[in-house]
Length: 252
Image (cartoon, rainbow, N blue to C red; front, side, top):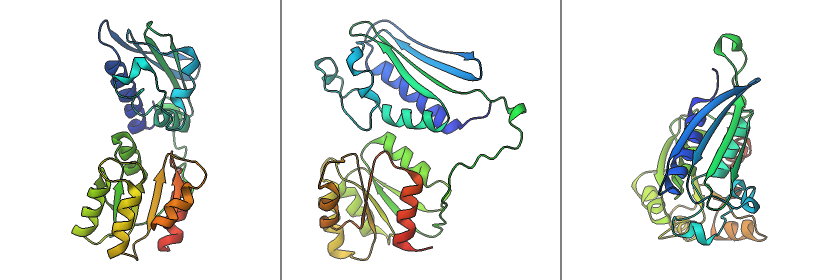
């Protein structure tokens, strides 16, 4: 079938990883079926389960569901908001069937398009493109799933991407080589993004820095700009919005 293989694999991998994370006894079952024009994938486990009142919240944008049952496992799962964004971008939907102590079944659908029927339809869903050939772009982001997503956004730009998992690594990346743009997450371990931005600004006032944050509270943008960031975008990142900001900062 025709679909986005990278996004498909990442969604399935995240759901399986979550099932392994929250299941100590029993089994994990992975399967699929075809319903009309959709492929439906399911991942079922016999783990701790999720209360129905939290079924929607676990998919919301970077929201943590704090439960006694999940604290010892470290959060409520890997990248469910990213999974939701990917699935919807591919034309499907995702949901969960679960209750506390009863295990969970995550299901998602994507359009079933046999390759023989797809023919020569356009696969380009993005409106804005960038050529960043010769440019080095450090991405400061402590969540591996988010890092993979950010790197994928820049796949077609020809930029050299440097990974930094905290503010200290971001500073070190800028010290080691000339950079042309920095994407800076705000909440990171060891050193947060605002502190790192202030350090970088002391030696590199000319480098554009874009803050990327899951927070959307009042005053967040002002705090980022005051720390030295040139712009601010909220997660999950909209590719065209981000690329338009980059174009304004560095020109065509």
